[in-house]
Length: 339
Image (cartoon, rainbow, N blue to C red; front, top):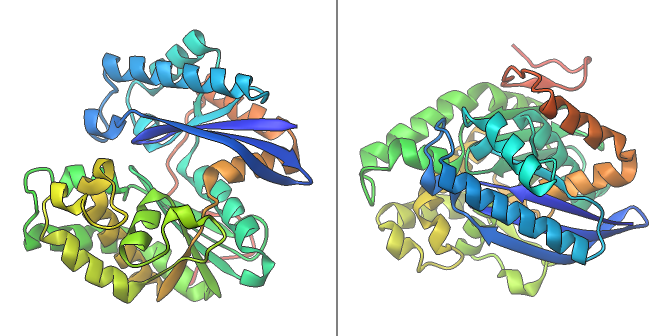
């Protein structure tokens, strides 16, 4: 069976086509379309018509490419930039009507759960109790678990793009006081979740997302051309030094640093502050940069649990079932956070 996933993120639309043989998704083709949606709309604002048109074109192109490669209909999802837009339902309806692709959004907690599954499969059982950090454009996902799926997950509005708009939009580079204000906000919102992670005492920590990959490269990790099987570590001490380098440079000069791409240069500082603060509060001195994340998690669920689970996800979206944001979801009834 050949399956495909379309991921509509804050900056790009990404397609992964993979063969699902022996329970492992083996990529045969990847492609991306750069939309930079986060540059066209601030967090919480509606997507403008021009952005929706570009999104429709990209999803249609991804669907055609998946068909060309012999894959089934894409499992297509959009992250926080669409999930938080007031015109979310209109955007999704437009994409479905004009492309035939059932694009949906996922609750942040489900994103964390699927990302954890991808990281768990990549890291393996020898990693033991596993903590996960994932920094997107609009949100930060945190998870912890001892098994296939996490014991608890959290999704917080601490994405690198969102915080850049909020704290650094008027200064490039921002003044030290703005960086301190950002760090205070991250500490405040992460306090309870971080306490739970410390209490659980993870043996291993994995970090996913392009933000962590680029920060890892900035701090000396091997470049992507060396392949996914090279182990890449990011230490908290190296990350602290990186913040010092990023904070004194305008975005155009950050893009000249190792690993920092031009489209993400502006939000690299906010991403580094979130990453360092999260590691410090959770007591993590280092994380492994994991190449598998939410896209692989979705493919693994499709392989292991069949198509019915994704059909339920898209059905809920199509029926516009209201979802209340939950800052911390306990997946195991027997596991309770300390007071």
